[in-house]
Structures are given as structure tokens and as C-alpha cells.
Amino acid sequence: MYFPNEVERVLITEEQIKERVKQLGEMLTKEYDGKNPLFLCVLRGANVFLSDLIRNVECPLEIDFIRVHSYVGTSSSGEVKIEGNFPDVSGRDVLIVEDIIDTARTLSKLKELLLSKEPKSLKTAVLLDKPSRRVVKGFKADFTGYEIEDLFVVGYGLDCDMKFRNLPYIGVLKG
Ligand code: IMP
Ligand code: MG
Image 1 (cartoon, rainbow, N blue to C red):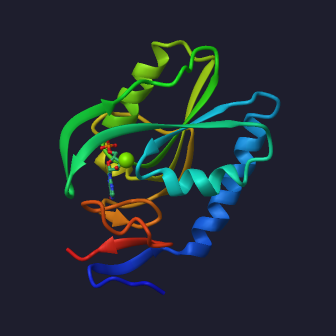
Image 2 (image 1 turned 180 degrees about the horizontal axis):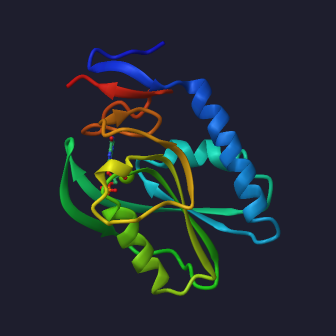
């Protein structure tokens, strides 16, 4: 197994992720049965999660991608930047697919912007959540893979300065 020097330990194994993504897919199949939802992937981190997730959803759906910047290195810059145009979400059942919620600034801001374009419904699916780091109080995703402690994690799409996205597991970086 690929285990770079900078990684201290595995937090969530490839098998655990696979099982949980399958469960999330089953929940989404029920949620969106007969609705043709738009799954909106937040680049770049959620790309791997989206790819596995959609193959576990058994109903018609569409995908699109949005790019958001909120981080420099391992500490939050406190700023959320949205690049490019939003896809047309008006009248659609939209699911934002994100890798991780930390302060929740990114997702709360995205939700606000998308809601202004009047989607039919707007929900969120995240692989990971760090509830202890919340700045936007009370913010919760509609579908969550795992709640984790206040650790900086990488792998399965998540990066540290653009590295480690290709690890098949969620790992903790050395302090
Ligand atoms: P928030 O706006 O503070 O909730 O930050 C969400 C974004 O920060 C995510 O989309 C990630 O890109 C990044 N992020 C937060 N925590 C981590 C982490 O532990 N590892 C990698 N990226 C993270
Ligand atoms: Mg991200």
C-alpha cells in the first residue's frame, strides 16, 4: 500500500470508505427516486468521492462541477472564493457533493448562492465532517459519511498543498 513519509497513520481504510459510500448511495437512491437530480461536485477535493458515490446511486442523475477556494496549507484563510459561472440550477433537485466540512464557511456560502437561483430542492452530501471546528454554528450536511476529530486529513481526494489526493484511504498527516 502506498504510504508516504508525511502520513502518520490511516484514519479510515479503503474498505470502510467503500462500505459507507455504498450506504450513502442507497440513501440517495431513495431520496432521488424519480427526480433526475443534479449532483454538483465541489472541485477538486470531492472528485474522488463523487466518482464512487454516483456508481452507488440507482436512479437517473446528472453531474456538474464547481470550483471553490477556501484554504491555504493547513489553516483556513477565512476566505471563500467561487470561480467561474454557476451551472443552471433553477428548478432542479440539487445535491452539493463536498469532501469535508470544517468551519462550514464554504458550504454555507455555496448554499446561499445556489438558493438565490431557486433550485427545486438543495441538499448536501459530505464524506467527512469535523463538527468541533464549526464557525457557522449549527451547520450540518444532509448526508454525512464520517464525523471525525479535529485532525488534518488527506487522501481519497483530500489534499495538503495539492498532494496526497491519490491515497485510497483517509490518512492523518504527521504533526
Ligand atoms: P470549511 O469552509 O472550513 O468548512 O472548509 C472546507 C474546505 O476546507 C474543504 O472543502 C477542504 O478543501 C478544506 N479542508 C478542511 N479540512 C481539511 C482537511 O482536514 N484536509 C484537507 N482539506 C481540508
Ligand atoms: Mg474542498
